[in-house]
View 1: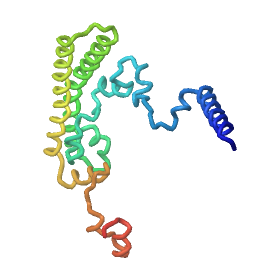
View 2 (view 1 turned 180 degrees about the vertical axis):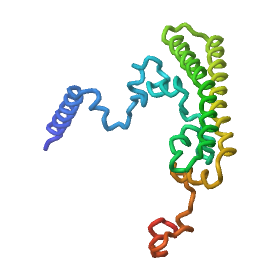
View 3 (view 1 turned 120 degrees about the vertical axis):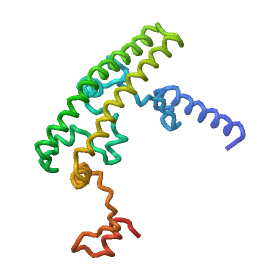
View 4 (view 1 turned 45 degrees about the horizontal axis):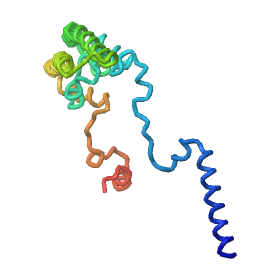
Length: 207
């Protein structure tokens, strides 16, 4: 191929590639670039209150946990509602049930109004941004009020958990945590009867 022919060929190839790129959809042209700027919050912009889902608002407005008592629950200190749900399995006495129901009722009396207040504050924050009617001073005020209510709400739940161990026996506490799936029994140290120790440890990655 002569020098002129080779030059013409290279120009032809360049034109073909350029034409393909120009006709290609923008998203496809950048598909291999590794760039995906889509937000993980897609869909949440349609919420009434952007920071709260329907499930969040249901839990807050009815005094449910909303994950506020994880520090207690995941460290083996039960909450009243789950204890009442498991009263048969852990063999709660009539007296224990009455005491736990009293704790639960008192907690709800505190948690429901606080939950509703928190929803209102999140709605106020949302609307302030939606209408652009906000500055640093107003932002700080709303966030301080949210923080105050959130702290009170979390205290209402966690302080209730603090009282349940006084009502339960040690065996009931252990059974509660086992039934909840929080058992910390080490499978490498507790080999079930009838299992080959070597195979059991290998299956549970003990070696």
